[in-house]
Image 1 (cartoon, rainbow, N blue to C red):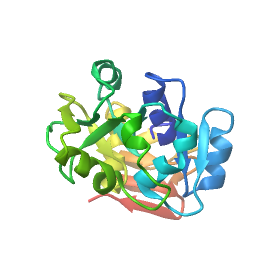
Image 2 (cartoon, rainbow, N blue to C red):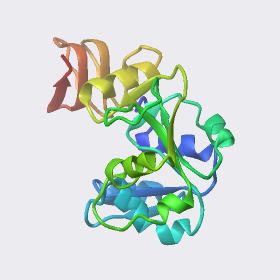
Image 3 (tube, one colour):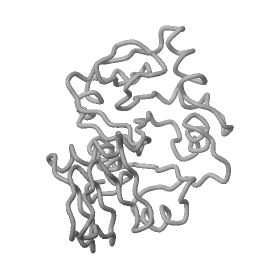
Length: 217
């Protein structure tokens, strides 16, 4: 995103608070394993496990340590380091952008989970909201902390992905390496080695290849 892979942005956020980092991979496994080799611990899934199942798979590696969880497709400038400094390491803390209650549509900037919560997770397909967070909230072992004014983008949608790229690039279109721009473009993202033809005028678009363009409307 804006010239930096999303997974590298996530690693940079977590790397500000710990030197022990694991990345869970499934889709695009081969490319990610090559990209991450020697940099972090890689946990590869043959079956998609979800966030809770992924942590369950990582329990032997975590081995009694508390955990900071972030999503690789999230782009935010929320202050993770300050939240970790204030954490009591006894309860699960969810970092929300403009929220203090646990809701399915919570704009999650990260989660701080003590080992006591992680060790209960199993290596089976499951999500943290249902498997861990909601029961913890009901038992008084979870809080949602508003991180204050923060930009937040879930890059799982084309609209948010485009907005995140423009935000990270100061509002300017993002042009990948090896691109050729002969026409015009406004608020666009061009992936590496793509072309904008002389007669083209792209607006609010993501050009993934010379055969694939996503128009964000």
